Length: 600
Image 1 (cartoon, helix red, strand yellow):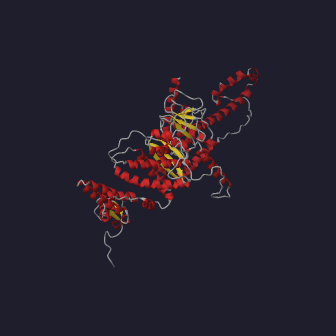
Image 2: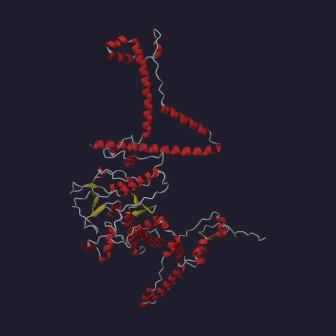
Image 3: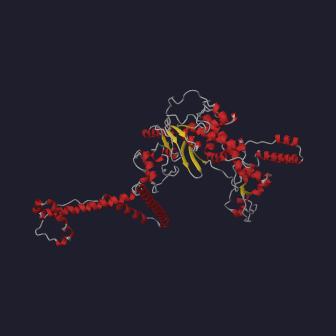
């Protein structure tokens, strides 16, 4: 029997250090890092660190041995070695000042493609769509960066073209679902082929390149992500029968584009404007054709079918939220983001033709329904349109309906911009604005008559009001019983007085009620009419639930009692936090009321 030696199995053989991997692949650290990023291989932390280090205990960077063996067969390694040889030849020719040799060597620079890596990492197209979150975020970031030594112009232009193509697909398919403005940028969420994709677009502000970021690593990610996004755009466009590269349906505006940009950039600028429809490969009008209905799930259940139809109608209504509306943007508005949102929900957008390429109508058009401004006042106004601030567009999308425009007029203090990505759980604190938004969606509150800035404490303290109402009802019941008894006594003892002065007698009867009852001794025995005992059902149900909870707590075994106590503590801590938020909201509401009263 062969003796089993130490560190010959298990974690000692399953992991390999980074230096060992470099020696095995015969690559530099730069090429090895680039290869790992492209292939999607990352360092691993072994559970048994002592066995992986073979008893040394020194902290190292580990990889799986099977991953390094997988990398050893990658064709890109040959390209990396050819590039290394190319740089040596080029450096030698430059030092010799041989210009002919330098030009000849530069023409033979080795090039490589990443198509096969995309196919390896994403066997099916739905896998690529599911992994678009980081891809879109990185591409939108590089599309806004200025060119520099570390950020090449070719990468910026490529990211810009691919992101504009993806935005056109979202507009045509009406796949946008949520938007939110934050300090980092604007968050978007779209639903493509049943997959939820969320990405962030940075604000277009002054940029200063940070010194603590390695752009070489980011460039490697961008090289892979641009290849992935190019494949994805191609498949997505063909799924909607659109030409790829995209083509505009209308040619128009040749004279204007020639004066504002080069002829080679005219088509790209008009595409980036996102105000025109893309050309389709199908000439027939498919929208008017009737669509066959195929039952999904349980076709025998009528409730399920009816529910699916209602959800489909609701989604169709949401996708055409701005259909029939014409918007005009002032020059201070972030044009690209607002245009993308309005066009995704069926609206029409334009701006001043002197501002940028792509304007379809001018400010004097009387068919404009909304003009978006971001300044305190507008000098020249048209009575046939609304003047609103840009936040109205975002809040309408998140509310999934057209909300009243009174709170978004120029110069008006805007309501809070609520995040659509927050889902309140049972027992969580829900702001008053969120409650009003839910009521609007349910059709309970239109929001026109109620002022958001003057919302009283009633919305914040629903539970407290219910408890107070229950206590008041109990007190009212007791007072009614006492009044009935007093009226019976007064009927027996003072019939003559009631006939003469009924109003005064009632007041006189109420005074002796304050004296204790034992002091009153009836002269003769009398029979008083009985009254039905009134039982407070709410209090009875609460007492029964409290008793059941107490008995259930007694039946908890000792092993799980500590866990139960931890849960109760967390719930108490959450309730305390919610109460603090309610008190804070009360103070803010009172302060706003006083400020408004003082201003008036």
